[in-house]
Image (tube, rainbow, N blue to C red; front, side, top):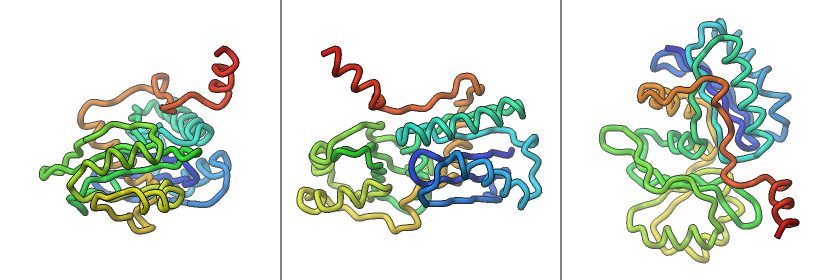
Length: 235
């Protein structure tokens, strides 16, 4: 079983290859370049370095959101294009779920991925790994204000660990408004990783959550700015 994973939901661009249960390659850049410039060259590089023929890929796992509208579209289009050429199956991996996989086997805490959605809002969810290693979704993906998230978390007695690019913009608000037991993930576990997308995708594949390329589409979780402006005009 070989999985090619693509992550482009935020500034981070990341691609990875998992062969059976081994992460054979991961290439991650957390820098302000457009994903249209980076993803295909990164995929080409890891395939060359691991002597992998892309036609031997069984599944393409794509991080489908929420996140950057442009980034998600580029990632989806890249994955769908490869899948159509190689006749590979696809797995649509929720971005926040993949971020929780950064902590597989490393914590008993509740994992709270937070992605900056601007205007004092965050894309977020709550997860926890069970004793058997499976991931439990406590609260599914939501778009919440800083205040709304703090209200939810202050009712939780278990330890919470934050991860994601929402930490820095929300940190001051959290420190003034959170009364629960929480901590921030270290830098190397805060960013989205294609290796985590691949591992989440592998579990989803085993559970039969497979689609073909025509079915895959980004999950934006909220209307685009153009759609919001159009709705405002009709109110």
